[in-house]
Image 1 (cartoon, rainbow, N blue to C red):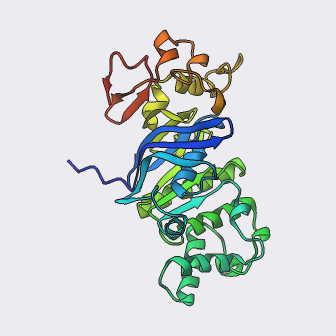
Image 2 (cartoon, rainbow, N blue to C red):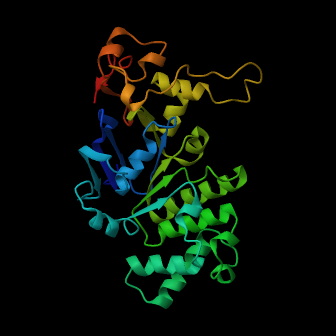
Image 3 (spheres, rainbow, N blue to C red):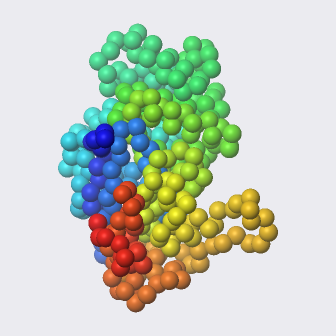
Length: 330
């Protein structure tokens, strides 16, 4: 039996707070997970659940006054949450790559694509300018840019949206990072291009052993791309496990609601299921389980105590009192 590989990323008890004049808002509450080499962990949930905030915390890009108030983030053996911004800049790009939703926000409109790639390579790797140019061309080929030599001197506005996103992926992979944080990387793309980009990301992770945190609101993207999925609600992971298990047999009422809201070929008539209500604001989080006002199965304990995390399988965990009585506590 093979030993479990040491995780590339380990996050334990992450807590993010945002001080305001009316008090401190809790944005992330006790978020814990890990990602192994070559694994894609998907984060899914409604807008405002804390998915992107988790990614920004890992990248060291939290907007002040938001800050990490507890827990720890480790890349391999190195702890990240205690580093200064200057130290994080050395890691970001080299050890951790980032892919964001809008490729135009990641590309300099005044610089040629080749310049941007070679500059990034020269910043993080000890190579000559000619070697950097050759690496840049190889990366453009790897991400599916046709005729890279001809497009090396082109500017971002001369590329389509899908091609720009491929360039952003190439930029994220320039220094061969161990981890990539992809925040809604395909939302701005049409469906056919989206499928190509997702296939590319999946293949690159398998080939290079890169770990990936994939943030999305689309469960279809998770099903097609990720190995495991973490479902977030109101700043907390409420369910995490292998994609197939979570999709086929969701345990948390919120996850079940998300799955029920997805249209299927079997259901051709009638309205789609929906989760009544809305996610609470940071300053209006209810006592107990944050989902209890929207949960049809909420009991008295759900309204007064935050649920414990329980194991429902070897790699499947849920934060729900409904699962707690018959399951072993994590």
